[in-house]
Image 1 (cartoon, rainbow, N blue to C red):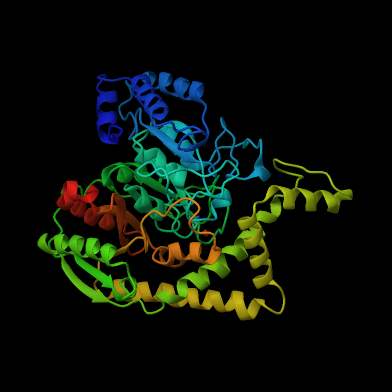
Image 2 (tube, rainbow, N blue to C red):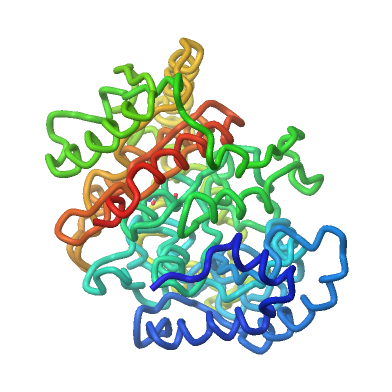
Length: 481
Ligand code: GLN
């Protein structure tokens, strides 16, 4: 079962055919039905249903407005690392136990301004470090399609909230694939916008040069509407770009004749799972049948993305996470004096993966290793970004690749951190280069969803959406079969 799509809810709410309160009741019923709570799928870290009811009750007052809002009456789930005033913001971590932000993220303010209803904070890998949503202080989230499997991560709670039909839109965050990979594992749409397209104000920092808020949708249209509502310049985030936001739904019915689609050969290695390759090939055939020109291209530095990502992201994380010291936020554990308090709080508050990243990051930034690791990684990052620039400058409009090297794996199956890191092999490049990318469902293998990824040039999300709309339309029910 799916939630009613964003466009219908908005139109019916604006026309007075349905109230926001009725839509919310539907979402709450569905959450109960799928057992979204701790004992069931464990999708939400926090919910405040009374507050959601108050929000929807106030929507009626806006019906007389000339522009009632693009998300009027639409419930939206929000990842637990995005600051909200009414619920805690704990990043799936014990160290933020009980922390309620004194301010709200810009993306949440924009959701509200568009008439959206903030529906719960979703479970996540601690501080967004992970690819499975197994590493949360609140326990693992289960994949609604196959509850013995992971939903992907780190935004697995948001992906599961959409995939189980509770909400049509959810916010996640992306540092190396945390929206696209769970979207692929759960059979929904996930978008990572261009770096700077969406404000990061109120998104708890993991790796600031890579982080972006991303959007999940049941469909391409839901995702386009969700992104449209939160995108655009924000004076509270100096890295947000002052570039006009186009209507991402404009290409909903456009044809893609003449669209040049590049297939980077490094994303289709001989070792790629043959069934995933077959799904991608079928999608590529559809694009050709629609009149797109498909050609092989090369992004030669792709294989360096994982090592580079796992130097830069932990380096930035080790600096960003220094603020969690027992003084300013959440948890405080006592120890011997001030230093003992720091040590007790940080060792008791952070889980093993976060601790590993802080250690890694501190190491690569330390005098003597900085040049060998961190500086070198920054140089290679430039090469990866240049690969994309060269391909897009050569007349390629969008790229198409698999989103992830596997389908959703069983909970507990991957215990080696390095093996987990390889889940991001096709997604981390977009974050390193800052380009937009999205995953859409392109079929299933043994009942488990497979995602196909489109990537575009900086701030060219509109073209990426046009391609995704067209492929979604062409695949029809095949996308979920
Ligand atoms: N899985 C990657 C990591 O663990 C990406 C996480 C993300 O995008 N937030 O760092």
